[in-house]
Amino acid sequence: MNKHIESFHLLHKKDRPLFLYNIWDAGTAKILATNGAEAIATSSWSVAEAQGYPDGQSIPFDELLVIVKNIVKAVNLPVTVDFESGYAQELKEVCENFSALIDIGVAGVNFEDQNIAQGGIFGIDKQSERITALRKTADKMGVNVFINARTDIFLQEDDQNKHINSLEAVIHRGRAYREAGANGFFIPGTTDPYLIKQVCSAVDLPVNIMDLSSIPDLQAYSKSGVSRVSIGPKSWIEFCGQLKDKAREIYR
Image (cartoon, rainbow, N blue to C red; front, side, top):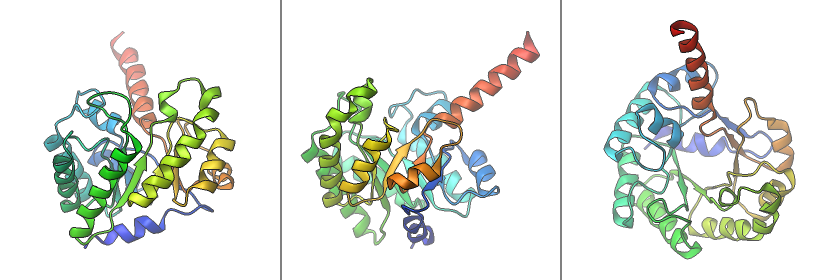
């Protein structure tokens, strides 16, 4: 039994959102673990870019597995992995990949409804089926791994002013994903307080938002009902910017 799974569930609180500063390898995980982090989260973008791949399941899953295994071994904290769409198209293989992550000791995964292979997002029934398959896989292995179901609906629309038109669809997805077995609901693409509060009120799951500012206002998100805040690739982007500046200083 993974001792970190239960503690990871308990870290999701509306009155005190869990802040996840996403990392990309064992070294960056250790830095956070020794400086106050309560849990460790990967970013698929950051992990892929750090190994020379673009985001979007381009990194081979076996290679990702080695990276995650090293992260889990390096820290005594819950580790949640950005599992994207499962690193496979066939559901059987998605579940096999999920099992492999459970075997190495992850406490949670992000699992998105973006159809990376074909574009767009999976239909709600199809994605619910995929979430249920993961839930059953974890149940068979005797672990309540935290499945953070992500919808990319807001990310599909670049115009923030139009996100209000997608609110009902997002809420519908959140409720369906809960019924399918999800433990959390991730809604990247918006930081609008009204939209976030509506989702938090309507969906009976811990809600995760992504804030790309350097230091998100956790108190404000707490008032909206958010239970988890992550920064996605922001840490990697900032790191690369600092490295570029240093390289220019040295080599030019």
